Structure formats: structure tokens, C-alpha cells
Image (tube, rainbow over all chains, first blue to last red; front, side, top):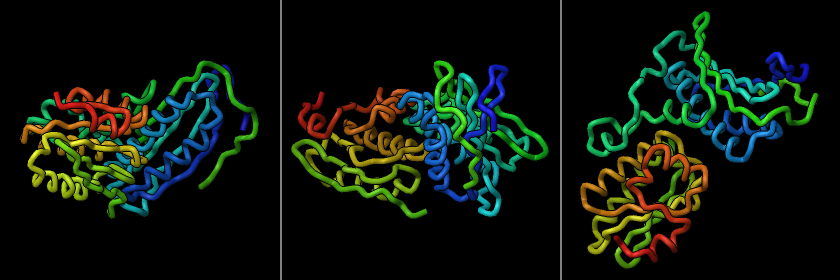
Length: 163
Length: 117
């Protein structure tokens, strides 16, 4: 795989899949943290990316793949010249985004006027610089982007990884 | 899903400390709510301190569990404090506005030492 180019071509740092079982988001966040460790993200950025990946993977497991262990959530970690991106793909097709567009409001939740849950998508969007959602052929992909300050990181020793 | 969250209840003057260990996710609801119920027997437990020092991971479902504890405590006119949060989870408490309703302390000793407002 070539190094990231100025035209936006991304280097694939890692690809892997997790079974759609509750709790497997922790496998995803650890693998992403390892793959993105030398990409020039600050410690704070890396923590935020880990949280976003965990939440997006939870959504993919629960809402995309309906907690069916035999259906994988596929994850790729990419690096461009000025960003790290993570794509998380499930088989949820063109569902409404995670079935919940409600903006969480803590005061409403404390008054019992909104359910206690519903923080996932809000956290994802709050943690990263950009989030894009796309659908294609029954697949649903969330792309999370965290920008770096510019070209950084070691070159050439990140082969695609299959976990 | 089996919970990895363990909660130890510690009584101190005018407060009960819930020392959590492990992960705070949906499976933490039962151990946390059980531990919280023990505070009801403490006559002077006007204050509940949630100690996150030994917590490794909090996700959105864990945030929902904390919201539930906070709602119950407020209904009972108890003050809720949090201690030992990492900078990252402190940021999440700010983003979710939990920090507007939960007093935040660096460690449990600070939380205990601070008089109730």
C-alpha cells in the first residue's frame, strides 16, 4: 500500500472485522488505537477517536446487524496526509441513521420526559471532526475523520491487517 | 451480558461513596442500582459520591445508567458528586452536561472533604 498522497488517496493502516455481539466494540477500539497510534493524533484525539469508534461499532452491531454474531462489522483504519479516518460497515442498508434522531437533552431525561439512553450518535458526532454516512448495496458505512496538523507518522510499514 | 462492574459502598460522615471498578455500560445498571439502594439506609447520606478512579471504560449505555442514578438521587434531594474521572471522561461529562448536575472532583478525598453546598 502506498503512502497517503496529497490528492486525498488514503493509506490503509488496518482492516478487520468483529462479530456482531454486544461488547465487541472494545475489540474494535483497541485495534483502532493500535493502528492509529503513530499517526500524529494527540492523546486527547486518540481517546476521542476510540470513544467514537466504540459507539459507532455498538450501533452497527445492534441496529445494523441486529446482534447477529454471524454477521460481521467490518472496520478499516485509513490515513491521509492530514487525517486519520475509520470506516465502520454493517449490513443495515439504508436504515434511518441508527433509528434515532432525537437530540439528547439531559434535563428532559432527568424529568423522565426523554429516555435515559440515546447518547450514542450524539457522542460519535461530538468526538470526531467529521462523520459521514453512506449506503451501497445493502451496506451501511459510517466514516469517522480526525484531522491531524499535517503530514506526520512513519511511512511504509503499515500493511493491511486482518484480525 | 455479564457485568464487569463491581461496586463497593463506603459510608463516611454525611456521604456514601460508591467505589466502582471495571466497565460502566448497560450491565453496570444492576450492581450500581443495588449499591445505590444501600444508601437509602444511611440516615445522613445527603450526598452520594460516584468514584470512577478504578473505572476503565464508560460508554453511552453507561452514561444512561448514570443518568438514572442522578435522576433518582435528585428526586430524593441527594447531592451527587463524581471523583477520579480521567480527562477524557470528564470531557464527556461536560459534553453531555452531566457536569452541570454532578459536582466534579479530582479524587475521592477531595469529594468527601468538600462540605455540601
